Image (cartoon, rainbow, N blue to C red; front, top):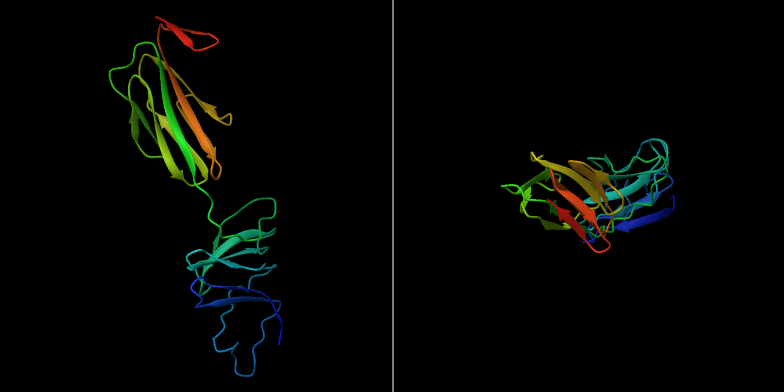
Length: 206
Protein backbone atom coordinates (compact mmCIF):
# COMPACT_ATOMS: atom_id res chain seq x y z
CA UNK A 1 0.00 0.00 0.00
CA UNK A 2 1.13 3.54 -0.73
CA UNK A 3 1.43 5.60 2.46
CA UNK A 4 -0.88 8.53 2.98
CA UNK A 5 1.01 11.81 2.61
CA UNK A 6 -1.71 14.04 4.09
CA UNK A 7 -5.35 13.88 5.00
CA UNK A 8 -8.22 16.20 5.89
CA UNK A 9 -11.50 15.40 7.59
CA UNK A 10 -14.77 17.07 6.63
CA UNK A 11 -15.95 19.38 9.46
CA UNK A 12 -18.83 17.08 10.42
CA UNK A 13 -16.53 14.03 10.37
CA UNK A 14 -18.47 12.11 7.72
CA UNK A 15 -15.85 12.13 4.93
CA UNK A 16 -12.10 11.68 5.04
CA UNK A 17 -10.07 12.99 2.10
CA UNK A 18 -6.54 11.69 1.64
CA UNK A 19 -3.54 12.78 -0.39
CA UNK A 20 -1.21 10.05 -1.73
CA UNK A 21 1.57 9.92 -4.30
CA UNK A 22 -0.12 7.06 -6.17
CA UNK A 23 -3.58 5.53 -6.08
CA UNK A 24 -3.54 1.89 -4.93
CA UNK A 25 -6.34 -0.18 -3.41
CA UNK A 26 -6.35 -3.30 -1.28
CA UNK A 27 -7.57 -6.63 -2.66
CA UNK A 28 -11.17 -5.63 -1.89
CA UNK A 29 -10.94 -2.40 -3.90
CA UNK A 30 -11.53 -0.32 -0.80
CA UNK A 31 -9.69 1.91 1.60
CA UNK A 32 -10.90 0.99 5.07
CA UNK A 33 -14.69 0.63 4.71
CA UNK A 34 -15.33 3.53 2.32
CA UNK A 35 -15.39 3.44 -1.47
CA UNK A 36 -12.59 5.73 -2.72
CA UNK A 37 -13.12 8.38 -5.38
CA UNK A 38 -10.22 9.78 -7.40
CA UNK A 39 -10.65 13.52 -7.09
CA UNK A 40 -7.77 14.69 -9.31
CA UNK A 41 -6.23 13.09 -12.39
CA UNK A 42 -5.07 16.17 -14.32
CA UNK A 43 -1.38 16.54 -15.25
CA UNK A 44 0.79 18.49 -12.84
CA UNK A 45 1.30 18.37 -9.11
CA UNK A 46 -1.67 18.47 -6.72
CA UNK A 47 -0.86 19.71 -3.24
CA UNK A 48 -2.54 18.71 0.06
CA UNK A 49 -6.14 19.83 0.27
CA UNK A 50 -8.41 21.38 2.89
CA UNK A 51 -12.16 21.44 3.50
CA UNK A 52 -14.25 24.60 3.36
CA UNK A 53 -15.69 25.72 6.70
CA UNK A 54 -19.14 24.37 5.83
CA UNK A 55 -17.83 21.08 4.47
CA UNK A 56 -19.38 21.53 1.02
CA UNK A 57 -16.16 22.06 -0.94
CA UNK A 58 -12.59 20.84 -1.14
CA UNK A 59 -9.87 23.47 -1.63
CA UNK A 60 -6.47 22.57 -3.07
CA UNK A 61 -3.49 23.95 -4.96
CA UNK A 62 -2.36 22.46 -8.29
CA UNK A 63 0.12 23.10 -11.12
CA UNK A 64 -2.18 21.57 -13.77
CA UNK A 65 -2.22 24.84 -15.74
CA UNK A 66 1.38 25.88 -15.21
CA UNK A 67 2.35 27.37 -11.86
CA UNK A 68 0.49 26.61 -8.65
CA UNK A 69 -3.05 28.01 -8.51
CA UNK A 70 -5.92 27.40 -6.07
CA UNK A 71 -8.99 25.37 -7.06
CA UNK A 72 -12.20 24.18 -5.44
CA UNK A 73 -14.47 21.22 -6.14
CA UNK A 74 -17.35 19.46 -4.46
CA UNK A 75 -16.73 16.46 -2.23
CA UNK A 76 -17.48 14.08 -5.12
CA UNK A 77 -14.90 15.71 -7.40
CA UNK A 78 -17.39 17.69 -9.50
CA UNK A 79 -17.71 21.41 -10.31
CA UNK A 80 -14.01 22.16 -10.31
CA UNK A 81 -13.41 25.92 -10.21
CA UNK A 82 -10.14 27.80 -10.53
CA UNK A 83 -9.99 30.60 -7.94
CA UNK A 84 -6.66 32.27 -8.73
CA UNK A 85 -4.80 33.30 -11.89
CA UNK A 86 -1.53 34.88 -10.90
CA UNK A 87 2.01 34.75 -12.35
CA UNK A 88 3.28 33.85 -8.88
CA UNK A 89 2.53 30.52 -7.22
CA UNK A 90 -0.59 30.47 -5.05
CA UNK A 91 -0.99 28.14 -2.11
CA UNK A 92 -1.19 26.24 0.06
CA UNK A 93 -4.97 26.25 0.15
CA UNK A 94 -6.39 27.86 3.26
CA UNK A 95 -10.16 27.89 3.84
CA UNK A 96 -9.98 30.40 6.69
CA UNK A 97 -12.56 33.10 5.90
CA UNK A 98 -11.14 36.53 5.10
CA UNK A 99 -12.27 39.24 7.48
CA UNK A 100 -14.69 41.65 5.78
CA UNK A 101 -13.87 45.31 5.29
CA UNK A 102 -15.72 48.62 5.38
CA UNK A 103 -16.34 51.17 2.63
CA UNK A 104 -17.50 54.72 3.36
CA UNK A 105 -18.71 57.00 0.55
CA UNK A 106 -18.75 60.72 1.29
CA UNK A 107 -20.13 63.72 -0.62
CA UNK A 108 -18.66 67.19 -0.08
CA UNK A 109 -20.23 70.30 -1.63
CA UNK A 110 -18.57 73.68 -2.29
CA UNK A 111 -21.06 76.39 -3.17
CA UNK A 112 -24.83 76.26 -3.27
CA UNK A 113 -26.15 72.67 -3.29
CA UNK A 114 -28.27 71.29 -6.14
CA UNK A 115 -32.03 70.85 -5.95
CA UNK A 116 -31.87 67.09 -5.45
CA UNK A 117 -29.60 64.48 -3.84
CA UNK A 118 -26.44 63.07 -5.35
CA UNK A 119 -27.11 59.80 -7.20
CA UNK A 120 -24.63 56.91 -6.94
CA UNK A 121 -24.43 53.43 -8.43
CA UNK A 122 -22.01 50.60 -9.14
CA UNK A 123 -20.94 47.47 -7.28
CA UNK A 124 -22.41 48.69 -3.99
CA UNK A 125 -25.84 49.18 -5.55
CA UNK A 126 -27.84 52.38 -6.06
CA UNK A 127 -27.97 54.95 -3.27
CA UNK A 128 -28.18 58.70 -2.71
CA UNK A 129 -26.43 61.21 -0.49
CA UNK A 130 -27.95 64.54 0.65
CA UNK A 131 -27.60 67.52 -1.67
CA UNK A 132 -25.78 69.43 1.07
CA UNK A 133 -23.31 66.58 1.58
CA UNK A 134 -23.13 63.50 3.76
CA UNK A 135 -21.84 59.97 3.87
CA UNK A 136 -22.94 56.34 3.84
CA UNK A 137 -21.03 53.35 5.24
CA UNK A 138 -21.14 49.82 3.84
CA UNK A 139 -20.04 47.27 6.44
CA UNK A 140 -19.08 43.59 6.04
CA UNK A 141 -17.82 43.93 2.48
CA UNK A 142 -15.81 41.09 0.93
CA UNK A 143 -12.23 41.97 0.04
CA UNK A 144 -11.83 42.81 -3.64
CA UNK A 145 -12.28 45.52 -6.24
CA UNK A 146 -15.32 47.82 -6.25
CA UNK A 147 -16.51 50.28 -8.89
CA UNK A 148 -18.53 53.29 -7.69
CA UNK A 149 -20.01 55.86 -10.07
CA UNK A 150 -21.96 59.08 -9.67
CA UNK A 151 -24.46 60.76 -11.99
CA UNK A 152 -23.35 64.13 -13.30
CA UNK A 153 -25.24 67.24 -12.16
CA UNK A 154 -25.21 70.33 -14.42
CA UNK A 155 -23.45 73.30 -12.89
CA UNK A 156 -20.96 71.28 -10.85
CA UNK A 157 -17.46 69.96 -11.41
CA UNK A 158 -16.51 66.74 -9.65
CA UNK A 159 -13.43 64.99 -8.33
CA UNK A 160 -13.25 61.71 -6.45
CA UNK A 161 -10.50 60.17 -4.35
CA UNK A 162 -10.14 57.21 -2.00
CA UNK A 163 -7.75 56.32 0.78
CA UNK A 164 -4.89 54.45 -0.82
CA UNK A 165 -4.49 56.87 -3.72
CA UNK A 166 -7.30 55.85 -6.07
CA UNK A 167 -8.78 58.87 -7.86
CA UNK A 168 -11.22 59.70 -10.63
CA UNK A 169 -13.80 62.21 -11.84
CA UNK A 170 -17.27 60.71 -11.98
CA UNK A 171 -16.27 57.24 -10.81
CA UNK A 172 -13.57 55.35 -8.94
CA UNK A 173 -12.38 51.76 -8.69
CA UNK A 174 -11.25 51.03 -5.14
CA UNK A 175 -9.41 47.99 -3.81
CA UNK A 176 -10.50 46.68 -0.42
CA UNK A 177 -8.19 44.40 1.56
CA UNK A 178 -9.42 42.06 4.32
CA UNK A 179 -10.41 43.99 7.46
CA UNK A 180 -9.56 47.30 5.77
CA UNK A 181 -11.58 50.52 5.93
CA UNK A 182 -11.60 52.61 2.75
CA UNK A 183 -13.15 56.08 2.48
CA UNK A 184 -13.95 57.63 -0.90
CA UNK A 185 -14.79 61.33 -1.10
CA UNK A 186 -16.67 62.87 -4.02
CA UNK A 187 -16.09 66.64 -4.05
CA UNK A 188 -18.60 68.83 -5.92
CA UNK A 189 -17.80 72.46 -6.69
CA UNK A 190 -20.56 74.70 -8.01
CA UNK A 191 -19.75 76.77 -11.08
CA UNK A 192 -18.64 80.23 -9.99
CA UNK A 193 -17.62 79.14 -6.50
CA UNK A 194 -14.01 79.76 -5.50
CA UNK A 195 -12.48 77.44 -2.95
CA UNK A 196 -9.57 78.77 -0.89
CA UNK A 197 -7.80 76.06 1.10
CA UNK A 198 -6.52 77.19 4.48
CA UNK A 199 -4.56 75.33 7.12
CA UNK A 200 -7.71 74.18 8.88
CA UNK A 201 -10.58 73.97 6.37
CA UNK A 202 -11.56 75.12 2.86
CA UNK A 203 -13.30 78.49 2.59
CA UNK A 204 -15.79 78.95 -0.24
CA UNK A 205 -16.21 82.37 -1.84
CA UNK A 206 -19.33 82.56 -4.00
